[in-house]
Length: 212
Image 1 (tube, rainbow, N blue to C red):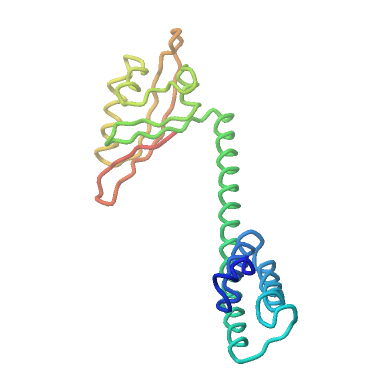
Image 2: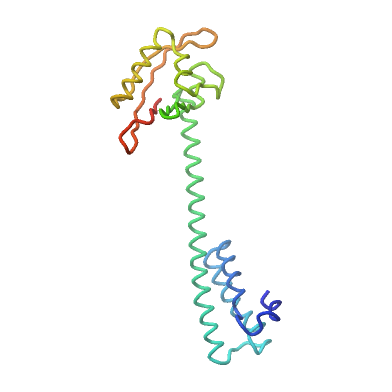
């Protein structure tokens, strides 16, 4: 590239375009390949670009100074690029490990019969996993997303009591602990146990109830 730009740059900036090659090599290959690119850049520029072209060797203080500047900057670029690549790889590995851990936890919960749920007070939004639908006799993904929708699933004789217990836990910040019955769509009655914890914001106000 630098040879093609000779008509534009002339005898100035003999090593300028090589910085991009070092940076790309560091990004894709790491520090060691980038260091090799630095050395190859020195020889190729010395032979093809730096006068007298077609031979190796430097003459004059300016050429040695330019070479020293190139080596210093390019080694720095190689080092920074290598560190960035290493950090990116570590982040990718961490995200992969987290995904595997999340999948193992999801499978553990699924086959253990435990259901995880969370109710946000402000937006009145319930987030529930697949087991919540299973335990309440609902198709996967159709668990109610509001408090009123959840209350409608409770047995009529337990509904008011459970709502009072939820309100008491929210008001006092106490652990939510209850047992109730639910009536499946086909009429079967099931007894479930729920445990939950109140979470408070920085202002001290409760904002979420999460449990199993």
